[in-house]
Length: 179
Image 1 (tube, rainbow, N blue to C red):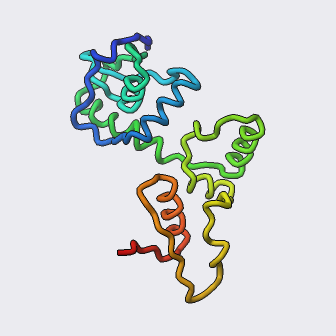
Image 2: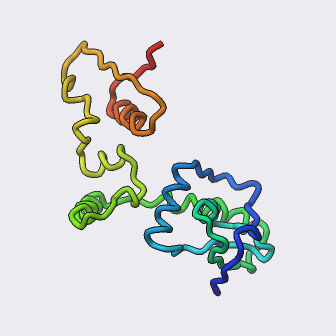
């Protein structure tokens, strides 16, 4: 396999790609590329059609990159290309975590003053990893184990507040919008 740089304008996204990339996730990929470099080439077919790497292409365009590294997979049948577009994304999602080891690694990175936001975890995932909710986001302190107590938190569309809402729901609190 040979890595070849190709102009971003010459690459053709797969029209039936079922994987989505919102602006926040593209920004995460862009931040990763800025920090670590473009370490994962796009996989393309012989017509410059993208098989894997749609999010990386969006991030590259966001960063103003004119070219990206690619690897051509010319040996795949049409069915294999269609299947790999899905498998490349799904197989990565099937992996698990050793949370004890992950916790150690994240703590080491914090001690090294590394920006752990570059790892891609959101607040609720970090809560699951180390069990801590930052104090300013922990409304549980005032209501834990108190029956009949209503917890009312007003939320707007800001991402960090929705993360708290989602975490509270995940932990079993009944959360309803206030009309």
